Image (cartoon, rainbow, N blue to C red; front, side):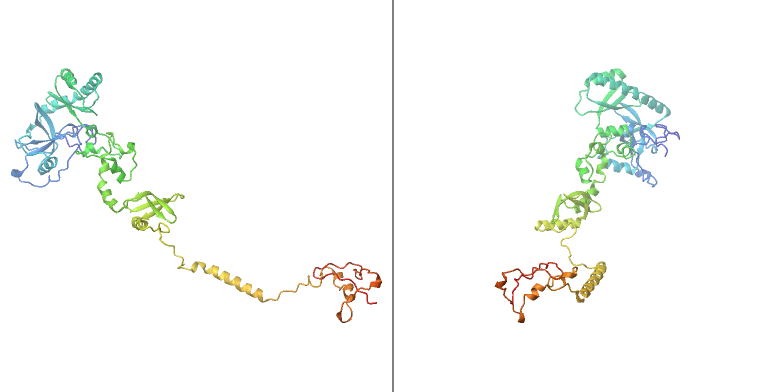
Length: 435
């Protein structure tokens, strides 16, 4: 892209082929989309837009019907002299720009004298060479005077009769003594013009955090107020270092997509927490364009994405005094719709059930351990004790003991000499004598 302020085929400005923002060669350009349309010359709008240093623009009337083109240098009428500028826009688009900025088409609009000659270009270059030394000297004078102001830029007229000093300050500054010093120092008329911090960044230029040239130095001419609510609506972190631009104020680009966010926020319910039987769910994050809201419980670290329609349903239930089971379901479904998963378990249970029924049908083996005091491990105890057999009379009647025998104790040993084992089921009887 070539420089738009070239004269007679020669690239002017900063000699960087129109790719910089410090030489005013490509700052605040306007695309004339009506340039290829044939408009009758008698109906042509006679006011043109002229650009000066650092993108400053003004409207001038082409009373002499000069045949000028965009980017051509012209000499215009200014207060107390003349100045050189460059045509930035002409035709019907100028009428629209004047209507947009509220400029009236009356006698207050100054006129264009002529096209710039070679001598005018030389005077303009000499005036530009005086700007940087004057800027450094003026800053030293401001420090000596101890004024709370910041000098940003100086613009000399091409006739070297007047200089405009652009400064920024937080409070009102009394610079009457400063004007006297500057007038005697540079032998010119001095005009002090205060600008805002955004205008200061636009005149100086620079690269933003997005990697592109600053909007205020390339195309933005109207500065709207920016508040922190614009960052809140867009779910941006309220970090001043990230939200501030090079001017120290909030970035102008925060307003670019604000209307789109405001339209999307109409479908997002305003809620901080939802009540469920599992507990209170707290809002953690909102995706405005996907219409998703993330909630988390107090005892968990998991975030659950819930659609905005479902959030509205839970809010309606909470207003009625009802609590859903979870964030996604109102009531748990106990009926299992698909039982194919449990078929293997059912077959295994049926197999073990049949085996248990077969075991019940088989007879259990006898256990003679406790019958008659017998012990299968001891063969000597398999015989009945004789004392018990001898203690019974004929007919199965018990015999009383013989008193003549002196009450001797019955014999408690068997034939092998082993003692009779004790059995809890039988009580010990006294031996009777039938004599």
